[in-house]
Image (tube, rainbow, N blue to C red; front, side, top):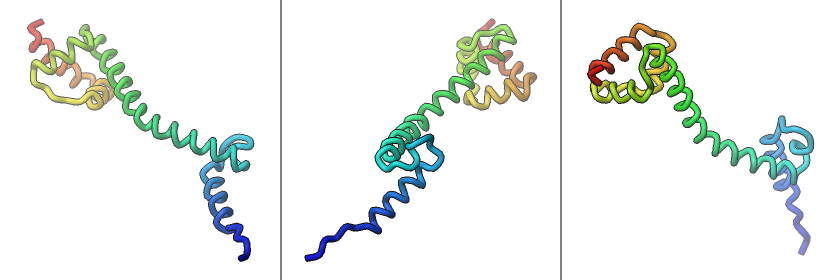
Length: 119
């Protein structure tokens, strides 16, 4: 029985891998073993960082809200607590956008939070 080497399948497999590692630095883009390792590492980091992105954005929004609340003489925690007591349901992304784009509206929210806290 003749030996089957599977050349075209191997070529396809290699070509597919090198397409994913295009743009990598050094041997990681064109040496099969290094490319495979780099590709697996990259996929792992991509998976991890899709989750970290959500944390990073929330941290950014909280920082922006905190800065804007302090400009209005209120701490972040008191501001959020006041909004909850005033039954104002607005997410942190929108609060940070208000803090940047529309400071008068943000000030009104701060005043409502103050009233709800009784300050």
